[in-house]
Amino acid sequence: MPKTRMKPAKRARGSAARLSHVGASGEVRMVDVSEKPVTTREAIARGRITMSREAIAQIRSGAVKKGDPLQTARLAGIMAAKQTANVIPLCHSLPLSHADVTLTPIADGYEIEARVRTDAQTGVEMEALHAVAVAALTIYDMIKAVDKRMVIGDIRLMEKRGGQSGEFQR
Image (cartoon, rainbow, N blue to C red; front, side):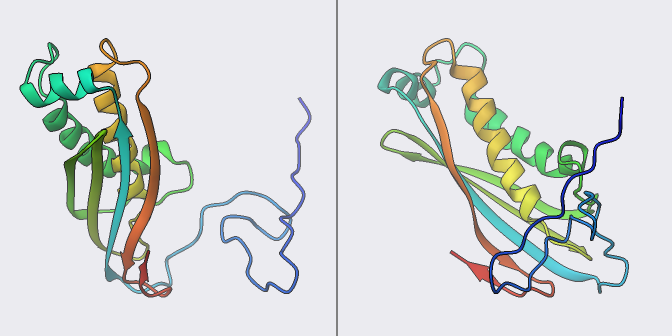
């Protein structure tokens, strides 16, 4: 099979920024962070899962036959944060010093928040986002027999601290 070469990413008019994961000739690459200083970095991500009243009632009454989807989702999210580099091809493996997932009841489901921290040369935004996504998917898996119409969405970075790019807050 012939080797395919991607065209270089085009920059927006007037933009000097380049994508750090794309080389000069368009090849995808892992960013070299070896020259960056080790700093404390933290990221907070959120998302939500919405579901039927029946699904909510089963979760909140403890009647889900597979067990407690909220505690299982918390654990799955924490585990996902720790495994992000195994799932997202260009992510660096990071030594996490903290990962936590909270699930807050809302009228039509749950708000999911992940907080992840490290002392490293690159940030933990992907780890926090991955934790939220996997926590939501875990809830879906555990309650899908009751509601296959659940919606997972609004997954977004809320805050980021540390590193060269400084702070971000939505």
